[in-house]
Length: 213
View 1 (cartoon, rainbow, N blue to C red):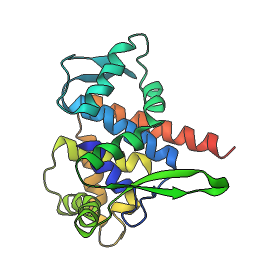
View 2: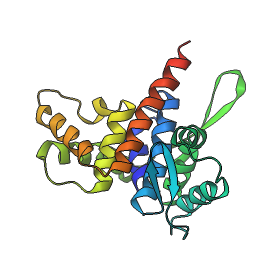
View 3: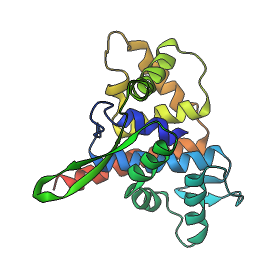
């Protein structure tokens, strides 16, 4: 699943912590969840709005929940609004889906002032190898310049839009050609997915700018 792959790339496999500002990670995951519905033909994106195309429930429980939310709110269609709304708990919801798949385990950490937080992280060798393979697999596709699935091209676009590129293509000299492949992958996406990436990038930029004030 698109959001699962994004989650594994966006979090450190040794600590479970986000590689980005949590707001950026949340927005990237929110976009990935919407992207899953676009890929399944359940929704489309047109001029900044989400459009319901097929009300039949997806087989995945989380995708089903997201589609139900969209259907239940017909007066709210702006992509930016849904990105911000879904970003609030996207990391938890995707983390729990990965936990059900056996890819991560919940780990509780104590924060300052006695509060706690739950991280979803790989805790054994097989899980850590799978998590480490997520960015390596994407880098390998981009370096080789081979034809990529629409889902992988969307994943590459979200990686670029949220600032994760340096964690996938970490060596400029070794990955120089891959940066061209990355651009080509995004440009070749269907229009609604490309639009979703553009709104994700601008929403991440706005959220981080507000956070610095």
